[in-house]
Amino acid sequence: MLGKTAGGLYWMFRFLERSENTARLIEAGFRIALTRSNDTTSDWKSVVTTAGVRQGYDAKHGTYNAENVVDYLLRDTTNPSSVISSLHSARTNARMVRTALTTEVWEAVNESWMAMKDGLKAPIHDPELPALLGEIRRHSALVRGALYGTMLRNDIYDFARLGTALERADNTARIIDVKYYTLLPSASFVGSPLDNVQWETVLRSVSAHRSFRWLAEGEMTSSGIAEFLIFDSRFPRSLHFSSGMIEENLSYLAKEYGVRMACHDLIDDHLATLRSHTIGSIFDSGLHEFIGAFIRSNNAIGTQIEQDYRFNG
Image (cartoon, rainbow, N blue to C red; front, side, top):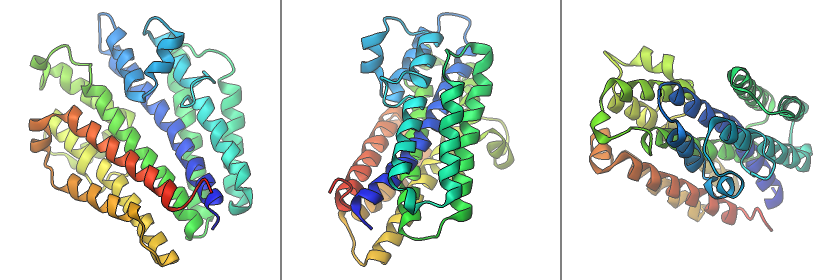
């Protein structure tokens, strides 16, 4: 496959996943803000910081509030990671690789773009926000369903899945981080009812609340929830599951092309590091620090994939 085509597939599905996960990050901030009775500035600032768009946001807005943050993350076309920008980029890449896609996948992407272009043409008010975020997730699921149900399991499929897995790993890590980065008023609140309510909110934002309830014994705790979101190989948005998906699809590419690349060594090291930890060791050394190192490693794998498979040339 041409590197440009591989890159188009990879980035198409990264952008689709990004749109969904930006919506999930907004939901995490929105739900956590609802647990507050005082100033929510720090909550919304942490959402922008975790999304990695603080510099761009600060250039446009002087304050952190729900209205500005939601609009910047959903509708602002100057923000390349906003939902509308991500969906536009996904559709542009889909058009570029149109001949590599089934009709069902192309139509699902195009319909998603058209629906969100219409849905995001005006500012979104708080009462409308939950339904809109649900629509973003639903359209993302429709594209995934079309991919799983109609595409051949070949290198086209593998590059699409790599884009999804890398972006999902990054965003699940960021959603965990939005909880722990600046939200608790002080360390003394760790393990408190407020701490546990906020962790439960994070579970709901990654569609993990019911799954965790099915699997967990006893009450919800911050360590139990964090362990589930990081290590549980049964949950498709956990860091371990997403990283395993990267490894699996890279191994298929190595087999199909008959060559092992540097990115294969990086994902092996990444998984080995992840498996060397326990939730206890992570909390002892610092959850925020662990998540930051995970995101940097995940990003390095993505960059190496682009270089190894010559997306730009």
